[in-house]
Image 1 (cartoon, one colour):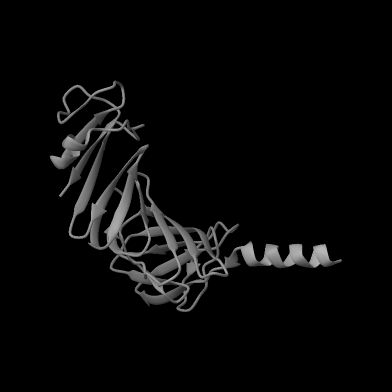
Image 2 (spheres, rainbow, N blue to C red):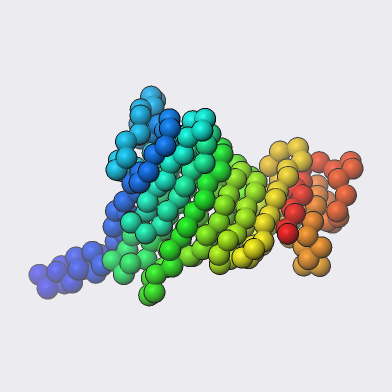
Length: 215
C-alpha cells in the first residue's frame, strides 16, 4: 500500500496541468472553430480555447489571447491561428505551441523568475521558439522587440536578437535546408541550395532553397 501511494504522488507531481488560453479582447469580426467541428462561430470575450481550437480575424478586425493570465498573443487583421498545445507544470513551467496559418501576430511572453515558458509559434515557412520575449511574426517574417528568438527554417536554426528582424523567401516550395557558414549569415543575406552542398548569395538557376535576410 505504501508503494502505491508514493507512485501516485510522484505521478501527480510530474504530470502536466491544463493551461488556460482565453480570448481577452475582440474588435470587429472574430470567429472560432472548436475541435471536431467543421463550422465557425462568433467569438466571445472570455471564451476558453482548448487544444486544436482555431481563431480567425476578419478585415479590420483584431483579437488578443491570454495564456495563463500572463502571456499575450495579439492577432492582427486577416489572421488565422491554431492552439496546438498549452500545458503548465506544478513547478510553474509552461509549454505553449501555436500555429499561424496566415496573417500576423504579436506575442509578449512574460519571463517569470524560477519558471520557464517554452513558447513556440509555427508557420508554413518557419518556427519561432522563445523563453520570455516580445516579437512580431508573420508567415516568413520576424521582428524582435525584447530578448532573443530562435528561428528555424527547415533544419537550419539561427538567433534573432532585440532590434533585429528576419525575412525568409522560399524559392520553389519548402526547402530542406543545409547548415551554412557563420560568415555568410553575418553578411545578412544567405541563400541555401538544397540540391547541392554549397551555399551562395545568388538566386539564378537555383531551385528548392530559401533566402534569409537578417537585419
